[in-house]
Length: 250
Image (cartoon, rainbow, N blue to C red; front, top):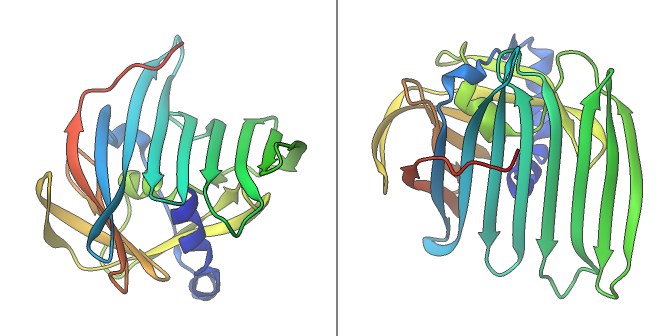
């Protein structure tokens, strides 16, 4: 999600320091994430400020499987967001991403940013659309190298699926940041296991920290993120409910 991406990118100096100390390559397994539809509440200084729904849909194909990860959210009163990411479930290879953010800020002339991108033949390509308050929409072609082993900068997705995180480990892998058309280091440090309580219940988790943000991911089935928070406690999100997947159109 855009707001989470920006929080994490703010910690790139810390990520660079982690890289200099040779972090472990982050390994993940998308087959560990079950088909589910998870609902979250956003809290800002303890007050309800919005919601998010993350869905993981598994689509079998003739020779492989896909994970279709969709996310919708509203952070009142400034932002609405829609995301759809398609990945090869067996290899983890990104296939496509569609991402739209609508802004509601009196200080910004930009009211909408939308990315529609595909990964193929070692490149990520497609277009970005940027809308402004006067109704104009600018279309910007995107075509950049996408090196083998690169993932999309969707921290919450890979936090759910990481397979080689042990307490104290620093892990990293290269990731594509669509808002900057650039590569960055997606990295985190595994903290000590904990048991936490959220509206959806009580969970045994492994906290994963990067810069000023921490995500709590379960380490046993069903694998999922159940909470995230800034280290200062001002902003957080918590799992409220999990339910069956609503199938997307073919």
